[in-house]
Image (cartoon, rainbow, N blue to C red; front, side, top):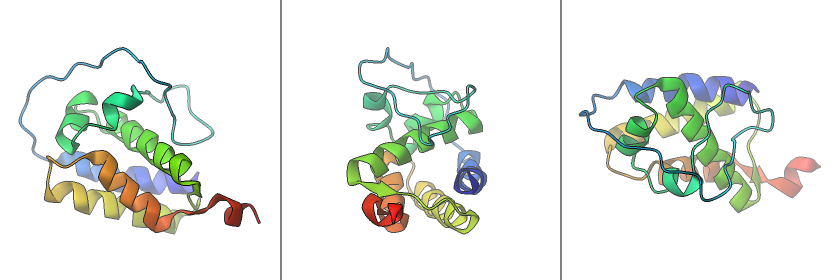
Length: 136
């Protein structure tokens, strides 16, 4: 839970980007939706995985309705998806959350047209631990 809180604080700063306005509609879910933390809150919004995996930083911001909490929900979904696909577990510490949030924020600000998933995946690969090693 600590990771979630500190990641949220760091990533939310990313959404203060000055992005041009345009619209992006959410498409109906065609694939399973993934939440980024096992204790999903009822208030967490989920997005179709096929849509957010292909979204740029700018697209994800628009998809979130330019809402910081909704943008963070997208980042969480992407982090969980990446960790699951790679067989990794993310450490649940404040320090890890800060580090991951800073990594994502820094890379996202450099180029709003890059895939958000690529940024999140790199952070997950950097901080994640093999699931079998984490269980020991």
